[in-house]
Length: 466
Image (cartoon, rainbow, N blue to C red; front, side, top):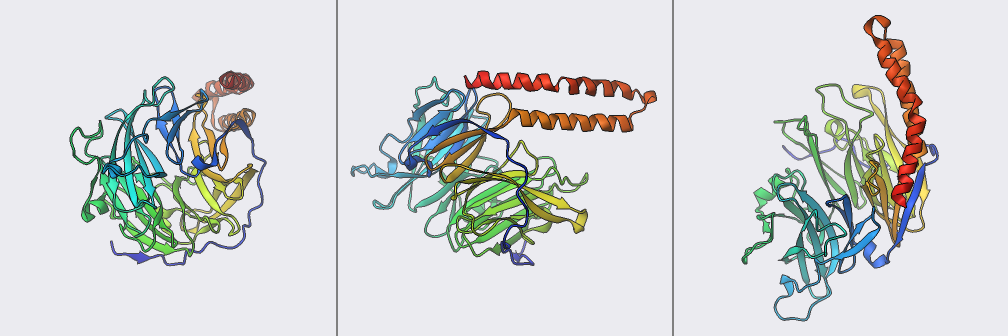
């Protein structure tokens, strides 16, 4: 499809109009103080044999943290001479600049890509660690197989492309604004011979792997995001750069040609991700409603609402220009809701709301609550750390990790409201001749047991924490 500009300029509006919503109901389950040198380097979630493990980057080391066991240990990934430095020279101080993990179900491995760079020595590399589910647990010795590829450019971000058919890694060039795309020929183990661990794709192949996104930008790419609906074939991809360029490719279904749009928001966009809106669900047969969040480290954030239909037109203000956005994530436990972390030490909970139907829809952003933490927020991960079925919110700050969770009393209160509404609908719609009383009795029994469920959940949570 031909490149086309959005019909309207995508500028973040002025001050927020939505008032502060209800008070937040988060409990802090744990706080893990960590040195500040590690926390700006990044985190990624690994699948382990017992639960999920969080990989934390030191300046020159990777640590594995099992939150349910409060266990922290080093992963033996970077303690060796790299291929980039195998010429007999003194070992340079290569610093970790990015990390991402991809679970490969066929191989049963976490493929961990670690980008390292040394500007003073002009040495750069990508380390691929092959971490099995067992190696990511507390009982493992931490030693894993690795392979290294030397780079001739400084990497900025390294991110696995989740929509690619085979393990494919996109690496952003910190100097030229180019996206380098690599494929992993052997996913089960490092190459046994001198074959490269990663093979860079040609221009046409790279464009296909990126879904048609541009491979060259005028400024370094700071954020990449992908989304796909497995049922309808709808998909969306976005790349955002340091000069504020945002490029979107949206496909409305199987066999449909992707529509390309780009805008310049006049500020660096360092946070970009998609999230599906279940509250504004589309009619059967229609593409789902998907939004794009774009945040800037310099000034504020906005939503591009319903990008499959609207593209990058008519942005909706999320946070004013006075807010410096560093990270964000959809909140799976709350529909149409996301969490945003800022340099000003504030965690925001935002919700996008819709009024009207079809072409007359109007979107607005509501601030549900905000919470201030002791230090700047660099990352947000959703992990079931206590293995109780509820996602904990792991917030990475300048000085440590905060593990937060919704207060169980609040969760159960929402459950009571939902069950009461179902009970009312059952009263309105069911008739004795249709056997509706049976359904009502079942709901009544469930409603009466909600208090017992709440007490049991609290006890289970206390037991898990102890």
